[in-house]
Image 1 (cartoon, rainbow, N blue to C red):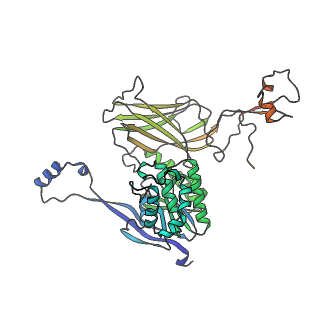
Image 2 (cartoon, one colour):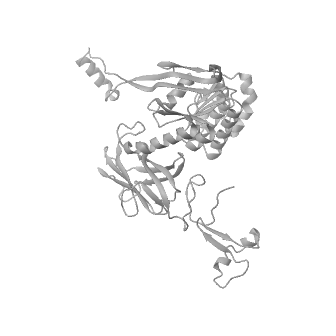
Image 3 (cartoon, helix red, strand yellow):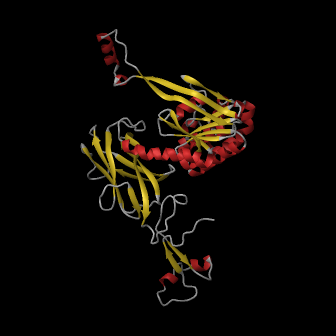
Length: 453
């Protein structure tokens, strides 16, 4: 295959940054001056950090390729190089055609300008002519769903309105290459559905899409090939299901070092630090293998480094595709025993595990005074292996549901919804003597589950 068939060709890309170790970045002006006066000939120690190192891959014209990896893996740095926002320290990248990119919410927007003015400004930044923007203006505004506020300064927009308008401009640019970074992290389900649909339209029209997301379900739905980055290097590249599978395996393994100070994904002020975590089964035994329908407890040990008095605790549970199943939170500020001790345990008890069989992970966040004191995106990994949730051993797979719900099915023969609606479930309450032809048959749990189609 000739190089003309590639929309993107990267060879040996690298990006290095210079950093100052230790506490040098937290010095006051007085401390900095005193240090230089004591030793004027001393040179500041510097270290280098390679955000990308020897990254090579090709993207064919018309392909939709997913770039995946943990936070800090180098995904955003790679996209900034490909979007020509920053230059590589080494290597080269050749891109054929005009590039449209959406890397951050509202990139290129001026807060004092209206939505209308920012559409023209942002379009011009992306390389659209004024006549081209005017031609697509109504479609852009309609897609973003901000008609009512199009002449309002964008500083009054919510983050969702920001990203909808920014994505709409980038998506309507007639570019040969569309680069999108975490656009599904903001916005409601309807907007996310529209974004995926638009990117599918772009890809089906023969243009190239480079898509970054932590939502593995969306990546697999949209992309046929993927590139996995790990610590700034290409860890895997190829068919999307294989690349996603390797990434998910890596996430499960990396949970063992989630609370290490070397974890690049860990964020926060450090006022409160979670030191360890574990899951207990219904008997109080540590485990990573749970049974759906049975109790489980999540425990997080902490140290109160800054003597904080209260905190908000959040635990978000994700399925194996990176889709959030539920968020469980606790606020200590309104509790009798609200004040944090020097050390202790946060404990979250689930009366029943409501998840289908599959692999899951928990993200943990401790917020103090409205800021993340400790945020660990991959705090725990666990597997739901068996189920006692329904009275039958049949359990839905994660392909068809995110959570399981207690329920009953009822069958009433020989009637309609309108007839049955007047007295729903009457037959079920009629007693053993009601053996008429129309008596309902009640089936609990998953006994009536069948594969779709």
